[in-house]
Length: 90
Figure 1 (cartoon, rainbow, N blue to C red):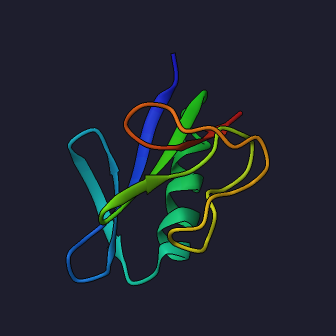
Figure 2 (figure 1 turned 180 degrees about the vertical axis):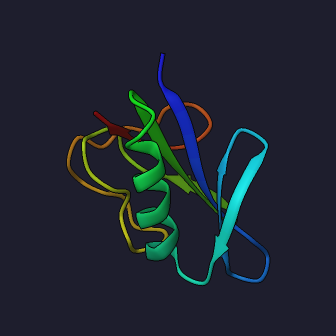
């Protein structure tokens, strides 16, 4: 069973790195949050990373990072599980 890690956009446009209800920190950019949560998730395998943008969720289940462009879906292996998209870290 995978661990689920998330990057969540806030009302002010910042990004929170979290696991469950535990918030690690906040980043000014989506890319910074994804890089940080990917490093954390790589220590807890198997893991999935989910990106939650205000008003929509996106991502894909494959072995790379979520798309660095908010609102744009990755094309490789794209799928959207219930509750948002994710990226496997293996």
